[in-house]
Amino acid sequence: RDSNGDGFGNFCDADLNNDRFVNLADLARFKAAFGTTNADADLTGDGRVNIADLARFKQLFGKPL
Image 1 (tube, one colour):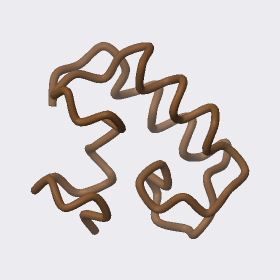
Image 2 (cartoon, helix red, strand yellow):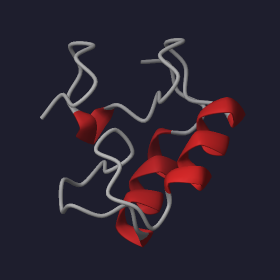
Image 3 (spheres, helix red, strand yellow):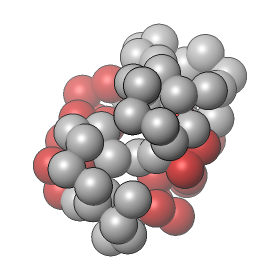
């Protein structure tokens, strides 16, 4: 699933501000989306932004997209 249409599936796309790098700016957006149904921050595709998405986000943090 590519909810933001950038060509990268959500499972490998924690770059929530689309600057091609997963960093603190993305963490701020992720935190704001935590507990919601925000499709862009739902990295696991289970319909909610939760601890499983946080675990995936941590794996991708600091990495280029």
